Every structure is written in structure tokens, then in C-alpha cells.
Length: 212
Image 1 (cartoon, helix red, strand yellow):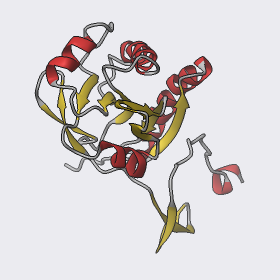
Image 2: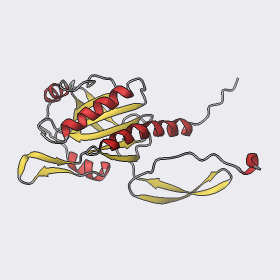
Image 3: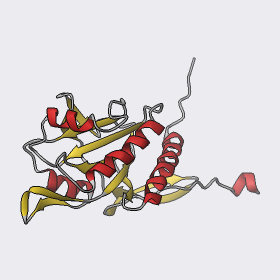
Image 4: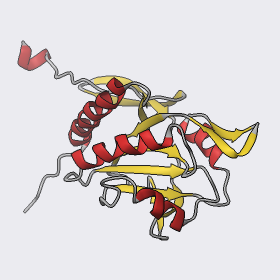
């Protein structure tokens, strides 16, 4: 009975953002399941701390962690960079995990980013990109795409209000988690859920049958 009727159930992270039914049906384990369209994040071009152009979410096989910051910030940017430094080192051996720190300050040049990054251990790791997007509405992108708050401080235009959160994004560019850095337990949860998402990514890969 177990072999004929049983099925494996695995823990999966939720998918955040608006959802809608596409009108299609998928057949899973002999059952018809309505197809759901999820909120996905569009890739954007950035300039990293080396002055090179990089694409955020340009790889469809990576699990990505991202947060916002700016180099002149005296509040949450520093702690977020410190926490991400630790995460970078823990996953440095896994090329599937990619980390992005994106500045919201269009005045943050590659030189500014490089100098700022030098104050954080592991900033030179290949899995961690520290970048900015000059001359673009990064605030609109954060609000509409990343679903987090970001805007100029109404009382001081040289300062910015940014969410003190990490986002976990899967290889389909869907948001799978938000993590508030004001709680250390959230940072630990992020580490655990990166591992959980990696397992899901492996299970979702189609089995390749080699034919002679």
C-alpha cells in the first residue's frame, strides 16, 4: 500500500509576493494541480567594487542572498555587511550560493565600494558581490521587485531609509524568505534555510538519462 499510494513530502520554504493562477494544469503524481504564477524579480545590471559590470540574478542556477546598504550609513549597513561576511565564509565552497550587497546611493563609486568593502573580512570571496546601480531608480526596484522599503530620508537628502533585511531568492528568481538582522536568530535561520533551499534546488533538477 505504501509503495502504491504513498508519496514523499519535503519541507519547502514559502514563496512571497503576489500569486495568480495561470489557467494551466500540471499533472503531479497522477493528480491535476492548478499552475500558479508567482512574483519573480527581474535581473538588473550593476557596477561592482572592481568597476566591472555584473548582473544581479543573471544566473538561473544560483540561490541568492541580497540586502541593501550605502557606504555612508552609520546604522544598519555595517551590521548587515558583518553578518553577510560570516555567511560568505560558510558557503564559500558552494558556487550555487551567491551573495549581493547593493548600494542605494548613486554617488557610491567603484572606488567608494572598494574602500568600504576593505573593512569587512571575506569581502574578496568570489561568492560575494558588493555593487551599486548608478543613475537608476533603485528605490522603485527595491519596492516593486524586492518588496522591501527603501527611500531618501525626507529630513536629510544625503541619508536613506532602507530595510534592515536579507532576502533569500531561489533559482527561479522567487523570494523564499525575509530575515530581519535586528534579531540574531534570524541570521541563523537564514543560514539554515539556505541549506534547505539548496536541497529543494537539487530535487527540482530534472533527471538526465544518457542514451547510448
